Length: 342
Image (cartoon, rainbow, N blue to C red; front, side):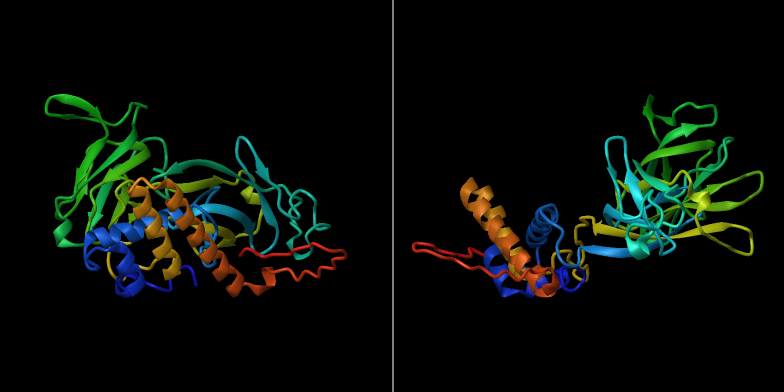
């Protein structure tokens, strides 16, 4: 399986990769080679196990996908119709979109094709600051070792002005929060957060909005330890109200969705982190390509990358035999040669 089968520790123990890497298997250089090989291969195809079906929920007309989502290839509501995905330049028209239930069988939309999703800008938080009067922003860390770590938020404050602060007598964009005990909180009312940078932490960290008038606390983001420039895919569903939903005891409506997604590249850091590309033979060939490229042998590098891609295609073929076509060929006459290169 090409995702979540092997870990960095398995790559360190693989003799084939160790021989090609020609570096200490327990060192940072070895880990860097594995990450660079994975980053290049994940961009070159949708391999077995890297495209998955995920379930998610939303409480509004904006859907923010988690860090692991790289590409959204399909979206549907409540196990019914496939939803059309749009942006400013193109639209992916799915079976049943806008055509009632006459197309796509069980994928018939059932909502008259009225709901669609629009790909919009990426965001650093999964909930935007609520209201228009502004909220105080709190930063929480859970490990004592992370006290003193900083996060900088960029956006707007109450009144529509950009978030700014004075550092060394110079005004610069952004508002920095330093993790502290018992809490770290801005003194400025923030109305919108557009981007975030933060120092890596040893454990997860959390961003909240705090309303001083009501004392209500609402989570805006949850960051994994290695996230320093969080950025998440976001989609808008303008006519979500017409679709099915559930309502909890507090009257909050929740819409349930399924998305076919391709996993995003996330580098491995610790030995127990899972590899996105778990075909160790393909990883070894990709590392060969990287080392050839560093030696300025472009032709050899491309040959090794093609070998790695072919190896991953072999795995796809082995794991998904239904994707293969049976071909019967009838040839008449002399001097015909049929050859399969791969």
